[in-house]
Image (cartoon, rainbow, N blue to C red):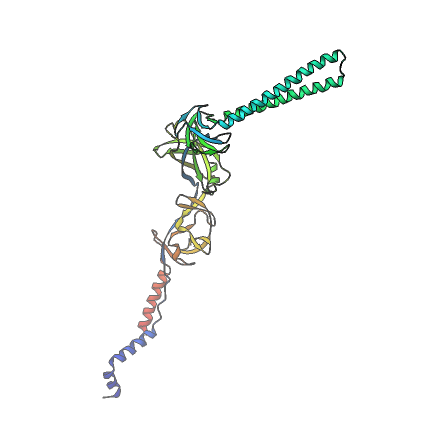
Length: 385
């Protein structure tokens, strides 16, 4: 028995493994195929984007007055409640008139004193005119008496004006409605001391109503020119009537940072009550065709917004500019054009140049036939060796 045969009997597994390794070394290594990732995509198209936005607001009167006393004092009577229908000239609240009446009496006494002095000056002037006619007094003395009478008459006029003013002040102790309407708020109670001009009662004028809403700053310019405006009451959502934008505030509200917009309610919506909740809907089309994509198509990296374009079954990253939102879609202002294919799902798993397969389409796998031919050649080469 030879030494080789003895070794083969002792180490049969080692020889087999060695032979397998030699055969493996004779064949070519298998080529690595690039991973083809499935994605969802869409072909971009430019069309008129619908501006469809809804905002809720409150029904208010177009004219609402915040009434206050023209003089200060203590409130002694409140004659209306919230919801009271009032007529023009109706008393709403009453101040304590005692101090005002005393001041009026003082002004009247001043008027009477001025009138007495005026009458005395007039009598003296008449007597001196008679003396002057008889040449008993000089012209200078007569001129002095005439000046005294005119000064006394001026004092009467001033006292009379003061009395009338004080009489008006006494009348201001009663707060009256200056329009026909309904009381919407009462801001003061009996016993409270208020200063002149402090609003104590709010009265809404009967007649035209409007819906007050707040628009975010990114919607003001686009909705300012919309003419198709519809109004629906929350209490009757099936009924819709056309409205008209009456006023857009030029300054944002300090608390909500929105711009107040007032939309006029037509008379046909007669069941709209003050304080009701209403929805204002804006319907319009953009002036120029625009491209929009789903929000899932956007890829964010380093404060930049991009999309993945599919070209020849591979993707490349293209930066874009967002032009706004329309419903659940995003309008792309720059970076892409109609006809291009954009990935809409799986954007965070891609890398530049990666091969992709669009779901729903039968795309040839990258290097499929070449890989099969290489594999066949490698098998034949291994067999020859």
